[in-house]
Length: 44
Image (tube, rainbow, N blue to C red; front, side, top):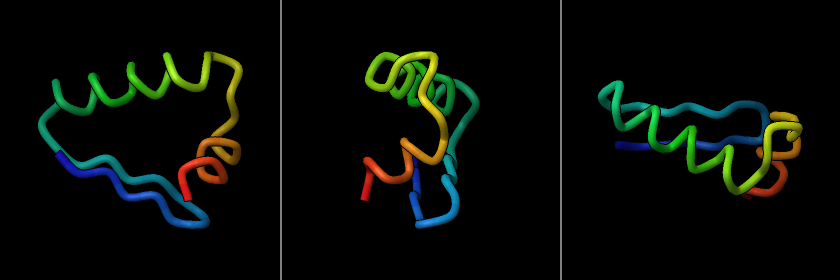
């Protein structure tokens, strides 16, 4: 499973279950109100 974060986008590549797990992890880390721009800025 790979995830790529650039200054303008986020790409998650893998099997469906792996993608679900990483999205749930991000949801726990950042919370449901986080914007994608905040996630990109924080992952650099």
